[in-house]
Amino acid sequence: MPAPVIELRNVRKSFISPGGETVAVLDIDSFSVEPGEQCALEGQSGSGKSTLLNVVSGIMRPDSGSVFIDGRDIARVDEASRDRVRADCLGLVFQQFNLLPGFTAIENVLVAMSFGSSRPDRGRAASLLAAVGLGHRLDHKPAELSVGQQQRVAVARSLANRPRVVLADEPTASIDTAHQQQVIELLRETCRAEGAALLVVTHDRSVAEQFPRRIRLEDFNRAARSHDTQARPA
Ligand SMILES: Nc1ncnc2c1ncn2[C@@H]1O[C@H](COP(=O)(O)OP(=O)(O)OP(=O)(O)O)[C@@H](O)[C@H]1O
Ligand SMILES: [Mg+2]
Image (cartoon, rainbow, N blue to C red; front, side, top):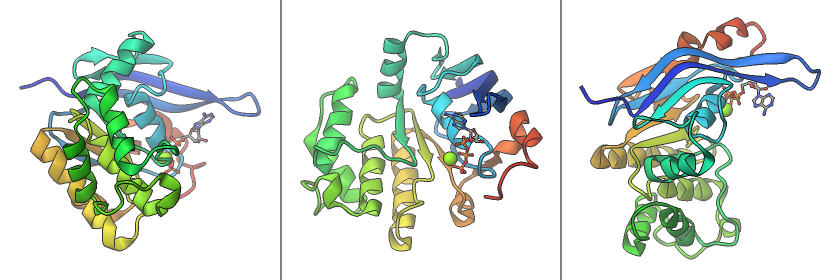
């Protein structure tokens, strides 16, 4: 059995509230994603889904515990090694999709490629953008794209470096219905073709139902269960 591409052990993460109170957000004994696995992550608003993705992607360090990405514990390595793992192994699509405003759609994908280990490939960048329906918008900057189109650029960018895992936080939340299915299919097909695992946070049941593995954060995050009564419904 190959090693998981994501493996969390005894991960704890708390925040200090504005009132000075410590709020436990993640308390996870064990969570893993296997190579190539496609998984939808659901959970109430405020249950810690984005925090979990931030910890898995190395954007946030846990207070304690281990976060193995492709066998390397990014909770313990220095920042440079963590950045290397992020560039080579992970593709990210987040709620705020963070495109570079001064760069065109294709340049945004090429910049992501420049952080990876292979050479930037303009042909591949263009075909990824064409696959999300933006073949005619390669030279537009984010401000010249609709919100949904910007999110599709973020999806194309996440696949730039042939990652082992794509993490997507509500990737279809601001996309019109016609393109939602296209984006999910693109993510799933490209991840399948490239052997990448896919972990998608979604509130949309019709999106979650397409995934072979569906999980709820409350089921494996003790902190979310203890805050259930305070959480707003998703
Ligand atoms: N930087 C921070 N400082 C303090 N508290 C935070 C911080 N980031 C998140 N939190 C708190 O942690 C909890 C989990 O937030 P998170 O964004 O992970 O939830 P979520 O499950 O992604 O919710 P949603 O479905 O609304 O996106 C929330 O109660 C939030 O207020
Ligand atoms: Mg969130």
